[in-house]
Length: 323
Picture (spheres, one colour):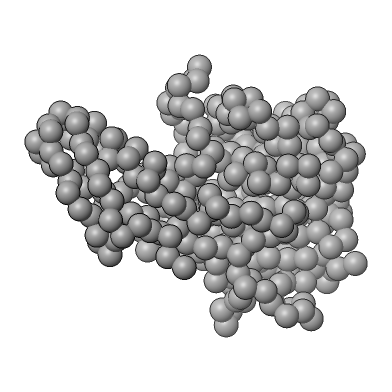
């Protein structure tokens, strides 16, 4: 079912092109009915992915220009950052917090001595309202929007823990969590290869889901040792994952996706979604090579939105630990 409105009236008052574009985007965000905004997911379940249908924007060089009618079949001319803002509009995140705009390094060396210090185990009773709920851990959570979106839709069902090696992103995410008054999501500044094991082993509840989504590819062969998924981390995930628990992997780089797939395929206790003796539900279909055709979580990650807007393919795997 198409969710775009066929006609949208937008009035631009800004005098500069940049402000016109900002106001145009704001108008779109107020008017678009996103499939995700009306979605009521069943508790603790994964969701079939439905692509957002974005209405197009338009601008004029005149300071008081009026865009009369925008037809729904026109293609939007938005940057990937604007698409992210539209897809996560339901979070209503504030960008006027103490940190404002955050500039971060895109790539860091996790083998650097500054990242070798284990993260301190938090008081789980302080960071979660109910620390006995099943836990999802997102390794390399980035800005945290993805986990916050899930947490908002699954209160009292599952807790969410984001591990991120870039400290500025963690600080901003924690401010957002406080602003949104969410008590089932928490972010930690941590190198997952160093800290994952002792963090999840200290958690009172079961580890239900682990995601590694579009990790840094570290293309150069001599830098492959910097990739987040190394044997010790894979082993820690397998040791702590509850029976019936799941591992969700994805990358827009085929080489990285294959590397992650090969590491988890080694475990007989794990079965990929297309190998289970179950009828495959909508949203979990795979291509001939076993890659999931769509994101089963209900919303795309920011990197996923960017890559798909550039025409890239996303390679996904979803495993389940056998009982």
